[in-house]
Image (cartoon, rainbow, N blue to C red):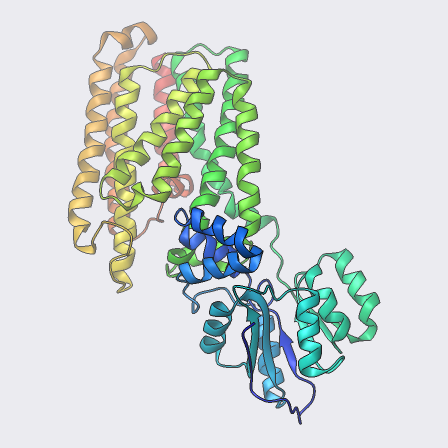
Length: 480
């Protein structure tokens, strides 16, 4: 197995040996490598796993992936401990079950290690094997060791002082019993509810309120239909959260290079990729379980929504203009699903209005992203088919789509359908100038850099938008 050790003499005290995954790093390079090569390489990965187990699998993913070691999330408590040990003249080593490619690259990047121990394509350096190797290199109780999980207990057993990060309370008690006063728990910065709140994108659930639009527009509030829409809302929230996690896991590398997205829980290391990969199927099963209680047709729509939004996350978001059309379709799908759950036919008017208004909002979102890169002097984002020079065109398309949405609403007001649903349809004309004002103002706020990267989230916090929406709802009620 690959080993690089500077020397075997330690005149300034016992050396400090540091684990990598979950210890020095707030992530796991095996899962990082897996996500980096996804969706390619499954056949080769399966062959590697069958040939020589986990060591060969790690080697395959390591050789196939290209990680940015400079942007990986490092645990500052651990790096501070390393710097303190170096200041005392102690030797510091990296010992990891990760593949040697990653160990070498990280050691070279940080430039603080006197040597490293790692796995290769034949050997998985973990647990008892790591303990034997370190005891042979430094002697039993001849080194201090920092780790983060159950697999590190054999190493802690042969180490002098035990440092730990990220342990559960039960493991902390077990380690304290094993090492007594030679046990030090570092602040592990475990993620709390706030990290999960951000990861699940709970604030984005407001978009799923579109499910209730067909029921509200039908003017026929039936309790059974309302219950069905509530179930549909929960199903879409669960499904959407699963997709958000998938998107975050696939975009780890690009998010870490982004000025704001690098703070996302998975990119920053607050949540582990492994946890995300386990959470996704649980959310999808819960979503489908809810959908089945509504109807097979609703299940079909939900599956189509998941397929389309997954295709967007993996590929379509990289295609110019196709991405904004897909986003508009995803919003409109929510409306269609709400009508299906409540057994209400979605009109062509509502469908066409939704496509145009949401295309406009998606284009504003792209405008804000491009403007942010322009203001910060960043280059064009890799993996996206937009250029900073496209700003004016994107703004023009956003305005055109928004104005077309208002035109469709105006045509709806003059249609025979309105006469059936409203006693005072003329009042609906007042909504048109409010819509024009709101769309124009959204564009102006984006141009003045006063909008977040998501216009929907911005609208929820904007007092003027709240007044505009309340006014339109009041007008609609008066018209009934």
